[in-house]
Image (cartoon, rainbow, N blue to C red; front, side):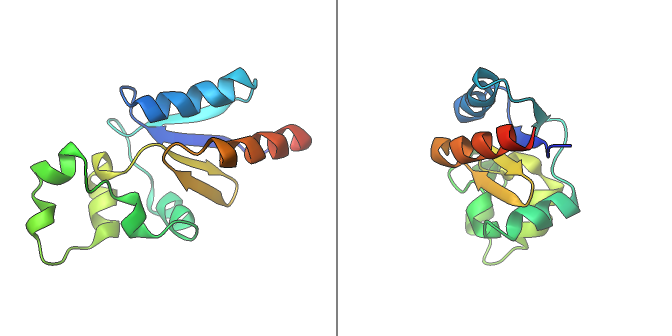
Amino acid sequence: MAPTIQVFGLKKCSDTNKAIRFFKERNIKIQFVDLSEKGLSKGELESVSRVIPLQDLIDTEGKQYKNRNLKYMAEFDIENELLEDPLLFKTPVTRFGKQAAVGHCPDIWKKWAEEFKKQS
């Protein structure tokens, strides 16, 4: 059984929609997780953070980061904040097996699509 490609993002996010469209155009079934409804589990976040540093996952330019005034906090637990408030993630976060990417990453997705096809 081939591993699933997961896309964590927001329905209104253009980069999330680019990721979904990228895989659909290649007939690769994905699991989409809408971060406005559900975040990454602790295990999923740990898996992603083995590849991408936690500080690279938090969207410091995003509306939620600004609304929460995290910019003005001297120190905070990034992992805990991401688990508690999934709207803080940069989007999309994509996963394929033990691999992960954040943002619009067509070069990485292309490699995954090739691997996915081989495993299917």
